[in-house]
Image 1 (cartoon, rainbow, N blue to C red):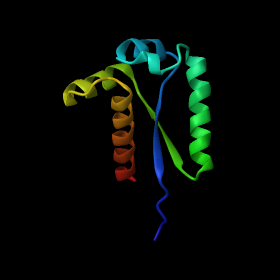
Image 2 (cartoon, rainbow, N blue to C red):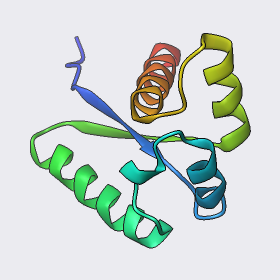
Image 3 (spheres, rainbow, N blue to C red):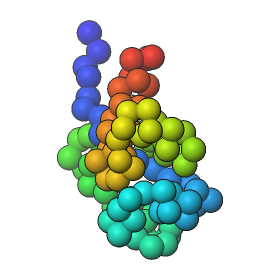
Image 4 (cartoon, helix red, strand yellow):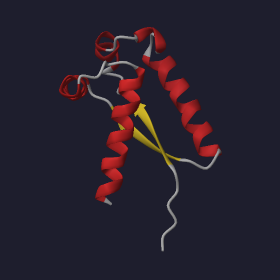
Length: 97
């Protein structure tokens, strides 16, 4: 039997989408104003998770699909919504393996 390792879903953004996402999110103040600052912080979080033995799944959040996903579920495009989306996406990926 293959051992299952915990996976932590990490919302991930592209440089091109970042400004659009900040306008879409209802809590842009919870994220750095620039992509470079966000990327530095995200890399630190990813390394911290890996140090404690978690596998990290970078879950890309794109503006249009994320906005549609939020609308379908009546979920705010905020930090909780981003984490819910990332975790749901990671579970769906794991189920395909």
